[in-house]
Length: 282
Image 1 (cartoon, rainbow, N blue to C red):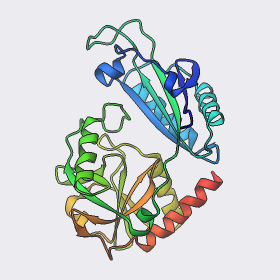
Image 2: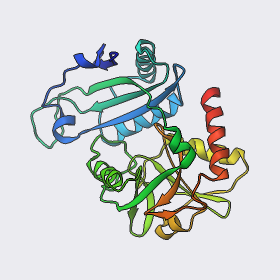
Image 3: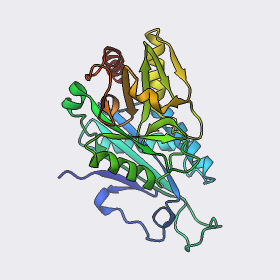
Image 4: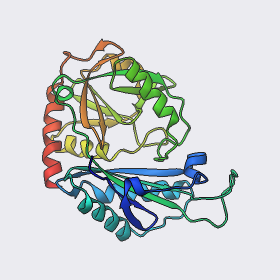
């Protein structure tokens, strides 16, 4: 197995060589944030947007940003060049650092910065051809889902519920509205128009989500950023989930109900094709 290039606190090394203290607040409290950047042909996709979101996450949890924008860019580029595969998922994690276990912020500690460049997982062709299954779950997360924090236990439990039900993703439902997936944003297509939950504190502002909205505009299609009633999921012509790792996938069942004609829809095919072109041209 090829070594995965990694970065830990100003030093490059293999992933196997990384060592982090058990007193790191990321380990003890989940006190940290992260970002995932897809790389195609050794070129980071939408790098600036991802780094802006990372900086926002750091600021929102009241941590010190340890690097400048150019330093983050250099670190990502170095990991890309060290990797064997040209298509990668660059994972970055920043925690509040190592300190005595106490809930209050430590007064004098430096953030722990960790990153690694794993080969990008290939999307199974079957999922593209036949679509994926979804299930709904109650949203038990906190009120700041817009921050990309490492404390993902509610998301993990939701994803496990989906996997045990034979589905690819769980859609979070809160107060009668469908918000997003456990690790994806949600799009609902009804009567030729597209709906997705607005960017507020209840969803993660996905980079892929923003690209999809741009592509819909390029196609001249109407889209609405609004709260989505749960029952719309069962009345939809098409359902999509989007993320940096899985791009844009069509769902063909939800809670064992068939979506549309039970196959990925024409609109998804059009948007998916444009997304592939955007990857090459970005």
